[in-house]
Length: 253
Ligand SMILES: NC(=O)c1ccc[n+]([C@@H]2O[C@H](COP(=O)([O-])OP(=O)(O)OC[C@H]3O[C@@H](n4cnc5c(N)ncnc54)[C@H](OP(=O)(O)O)[C@@H]3O)[C@@H](O)[C@H]2O)c1
Image (cartoon, rainbow, N blue to C red; front, side, top):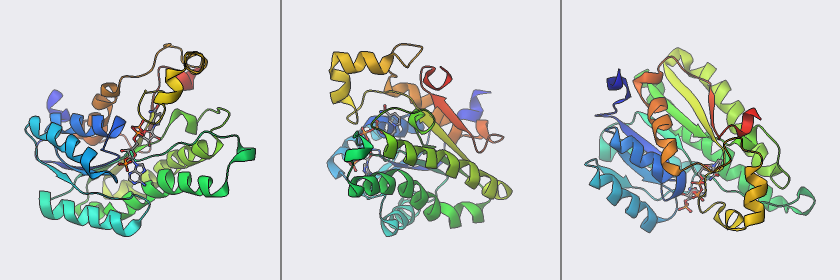
């Protein structure tokens, strides 16, 4: 049964692989046997992830990419296929958050969040489309958020982008089912990463945020690994269009 979770011989692109959840997912995929193309804007941080992948015995290539720019995503996909020989899995983890009351949010901020979190996911799927559909196989894992399903003051733009990812994932799954391409999403709850470390360092804010989480703790980044491996592997071939909430029960409360 565990054989179905192996990714030997597969190649994955992971965006947002320079740190946080993206790096953790790149390492989990490598541990399961995949070679990985690592993308985000920061080359030195991607190189650190690449070293860690190589220590696991897998190949890694570093391809600095801004997910907001479709041409860069096309280059990422093309170079991955050229350098690693194929492409089977796309994990879109690049994302940004900006906490601000909507009444004070600048329209440019709204656009930056939507561009990165939602258009970035579109750009990734659009860039792999031709290859996955022709191959009649492929796995897409989009990273949404629990805040795409439940409200929190200050997060309206972020929530809109992540709710968009959940809806996009469903619609694309139905569209690509006939090509045997599975499209799913992971909606993380709170994991302490660079995105929110400052907030979690403040005891009052930490307590307020964890009040929404039945398990009363944040996730550990390595806890996302088994789920992304499952969604990237043949073990999940009958699952598509789903958003799995990895959130300590936040969305259930
Ligand atoms: N941490 C949480 O509690 C939490 C909860 C729910 C959902 N999420 C989601 O999980 C994903 C990963 O977040 P994280 O917690 O790992 O945050 P993080 O540590 O801040 O990582 C964000 C990643 O996105 C990349 N990125 C940002 N803008 C980009 C752009 N324009 N082009 C390419 N890459 C870009 C960053 O790399 P560069 O700066 O090098 O470009 C970095 O690798 C995000 O989609 C986030 O919304 C996180």
